[in-house]
Length: 184
Length: 146
Image (cartoon, rainbow over all chains, first blue to last red; front, side, top):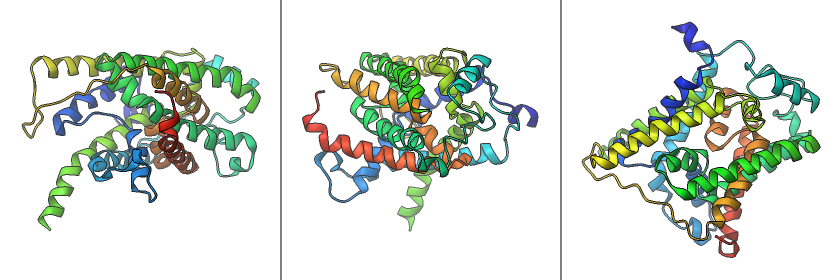
């Protein structure tokens, strides 16, 4: 059992376990799964609001609590269920990334790109700060992120969500094949 | 005091769902920048399998909830708001911008938080930047095509 828990979980275990949360949230309190909404709630807590943030963020307390749980869950995953081996990445991906100059494959993220020290370099600033900014801007502009559109939205067969997901991939492919080779 | 207790009791299930998520995100490696790269390079089925099977399970459940008009535990009707298509500009434009950021940071909003707990504290900076991005959208919103 512990062996299974410390191994990476295969897609057919993880995917359904994630999907079942959509009906679970509806059943618990009629809530719709969508995590980027929380970024808006944080803005609504800040002073000096524009109309878009002029609402009572406490209505999103449930979602912010869920987000806090995710931090704790990440810590539990690292502390008690950690997989000692590097990510079992496909050889093709390793080869491609090595060509781009990624040298460390030991953690869940490349430690030479995502660390406090990396923020001193232009590539670190682009990956962490510009990337984060685009995630926040884009998810609110699109009205949802991977959870709200790709999972909740597609599950409800919403055409807008399908368009958004195609956009996610268009942006991801542009960044992967055109931007990363320049940045890294 | 009782009101406080009620609030805690009301929020506790969401905390537990969050913890559950954080563990799954970590153990399935969807919070890994490497896995996101592997996905965008179409070099493994892992991420497609996770997102695809999550959607299938969620879609079947949503259909059951709708068809049988199942109510939530407190007895209220479950309302699933449809998304407004409009001209659709916001979906492809916002989606593309989001995708650029997703591939750069290797994390969407949920995984960013899981990574902080996992032990990549620099993701706090990415989260702050994401809040700044959301704020910027809020300010520019009246001038953006939707």
